[in-house]
Structure formats: structure tokens, C-alpha cells
Image 1 (cartoon, helix red, strand yellow):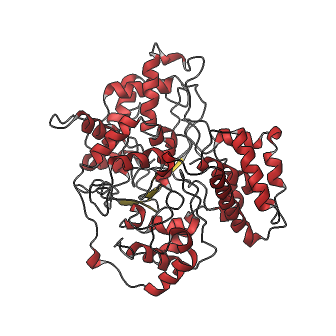
Image 2: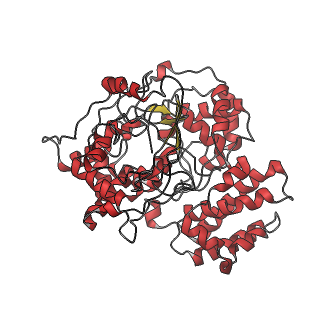
Image 3: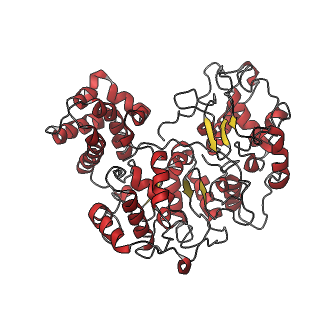
Length: 529
């Protein structure tokens, strides 16, 4: 099982927006920066909502840092780009920026000095946002408490470290212009299009890139590789895309990170759901679904041309031995407890990266689905490639059998899992729930310290009961992931657990927590939908 994946967006090479990211900042109690002006509270609230759609906090917040204070490094094939401070600090932030300068940053991709902004900031999409909405975002940011946080240096290779060169890139690939509604379409379609092609910047990830790392014209939303992940096809194609999804399934996936029969979000998409999409109104999510379902279908591979140079029998054996007990021999999973692999969008995608990384690092609990253990220390690189290809070509999935030993080996060090030890243990889990667990009066943290192999099951049952009493509103996934995050440093410091068994112990702990919760909380009608 894995923690949240540490991922940061970039648009020069591609772009996207975990429990490890800071919570969205709230307006300062004293009104924030002095130059907030007379911005109406409703405008600030609207700006906060828009900033959430744009997932601004994900890039402009470093792990453990203040929200919007920058300091996060965004990976690109050309090096690392440091995100700037966008709090209203006048010295290190945007406190001295005028309305026009702020608008030009989002609309034209230039900063307050007129210099080109690296397209790590997805102004290719933000240019579509109306000026009124841009000003609302500015009002929200200027309502925050200023943070003194100087910008970190970029680490880019020549010639990409020369900012003026972005002018040529813009001339080729950037088209400035505010979103223009299509009068032949419904208001719902237009609202969905405005979100998806603007602040949502969905195409930034879900579109293949050319050699200059710009979106390939005519291939929007057809899926593409990004920072060792694969953002799937989200056109209306019924197999590779979401054409076979109902609007309600799309909304459930965006809102909760899971839709029964369609699988669960993980990696970058899970982060986007957690930090952004889950906070959108149901009406906006429905409008997004309406728009996405009208995107013309795009096919990116043909079954007749699939790679088949792998040993099918080897993949079968690995699957039956390690996967079938949960995902079932037919790949249909176990209702709302274990996601299906048959027809799962992550499995049928053109790229195999997501399947490989899920096998390597496992997955945290998501919505009603339980945690999945990682197999990085259990299976060989060849076995992982074999089983990935098996699930991608079985049960009618028909995806390319393109997972290789080389792919698995390259993704292994990039996939942070519980097997990584103390570094993984920096993940705090769900903030309020973590506070309840660590509160000395609850006794929960003390009980976890007393766990050993003999007392594992009864202690976990008691701990789960205590957590549910202390935080009755916590979801299954929040309890599983936060308790596991809290137990992580304990097990890795436990000298009685051999080093090679610490990861498996943590996986076992997470699974037993999920089992205890499921036994205490029978499936509800809402969870079964």
C-alpha cells in the first residue's frame, strides 16, 4: 500500500494538479494585506472557489510550507521550476501587483515586469478565464495573510534557462483569448466547457505532447504520459475514454475519487480530486460531465497492432497467486470493497505506467475501496511486467501489452511506497483525524505503540472503535490512511520487526484496519451506489 504520491504539475512538459498537501488557506481574520481594498466578502468567497477549481494551492505550496507561499519544485524534462509566492506579501509575494498585472499573468503569461512566465503555470488554459473571475481570484489571494517567502532558484538546462526563449514557444503554441460561449449549446455545456478548458486545465495532462512538450493539435483529451504517469483518454470513446460512463458515474469519480464498476483515482488524479474537484458544487460537476461526454471520440491504439511479446501463462500465474483473491479471477473485483480491473480506465489506457505503479507501490484506501498492498519487494520486475500485461489484455480490456522490465525498473525508484521507510512516514494523513489520534487523552497513539504480532488484531479493533468514537464523521478511507500514516513511524522504529517485514507489517495493519471498519459499519445504500 502506498501513501499519497508526491507529484507536482508542470505545463512546459505537461501539466496537472494527497493528503500531504497543505489545506486551502482561509482568509486572514484581520482582512489580510493592507491593499485588499474594499473587496466584497462574496467576491472573496467566489475567488476562493475559483482558486480551488484551478488547484492553485497544489503548485504554490511546498510540503510542510504555508499555503500559496510557493517553494515547491515542479519537474519537467528540462529541469526543475520553483513555484513563486502568491500571498500578498509586498516584498516576496504579489502584494504590489496591480489588477492589470495579475490579469496579464493569467491571460497573457507575463509577470509584473512584463517577463515571460514559464508555462509551468498553465496560462494556456487560464487565458480563457473572464476578467471578472480573475479579479475574484486576486481578491481572495489578497485577503490572505502575507507570507515572507523569497522565490527559490530554478534549475533548468540551457537554453531553457533563458526566459526570453518562451516568446518563441508562445508564438508557436499559445493562443490568447477569453472563453466565448457557444450559443448553440446549453448553459450546462458552456459552463462545463468553461471549467474544463479554463481553470480546470484538464487537457494539460490528458493530451499527448510533441517534442517541444506542447499539446499536439487535434489530440486534446486523448491521453498522454506525464512525469512517469499516464493521464488516460477522457474523450467520449466508449473503450479508451469515458463514452460508456454515465454522467452520474463521472460525477461520483470526480467528487469522491471512485465510481463503482469504473475503478478508483490514484496518483496525480487522486490529488486533484482531494484538493480540487471534491470541493466543487454538484451542479458544476454535472456540467463538467455534460461537456466531457460531447468531446469527439479519439482512438489511440488498435488491438490488432498490440504488442504480444510476453509470456501469457506467466502473467496468469502471477495474477492467480497474488491478485485473484481480491480482484477475482474474472477481474470484476468485490463490489465497493475491491475495484474492478475489467473495463477499468487506468487498465485500458494506452500507457501502462499507472498499472505498473499501482502494482509496485500499492494504493491507499479510496472512498469505500480498501487499501492495496505494494508488490515492489515481492515480485520481480519481469513478474510485474507480466501481470500488468495480463490484466491489460484480459476480460475484454484489449489494451497494449507494453509493460516491460525496463519500464518497471525505471518506475520503481519513482514510486514512493511504505517500503521506502522513514521518508514515507512524513505523510501526516487527514489533519483533524491525525490530531484526534495523537491527542494524549484518546489513548490511541499509546495503544498503537503497544502493538505486536500477537496483539495486532484485537488492538486494531479497539483502536478503530476509539477513533470512530473520537471522530464519528470520519470516512473509511480517512481512518485507514491516517491510522496507517500514524503507525508508519512506529513500525519502522520497532526493532522487533525485521527490516524486510516492516513494509508487509504496515500493509497488514492497513488491511486489518479496513476489515475492522467494514465489520463495524455494514455497507450503506449510499456506499453501494
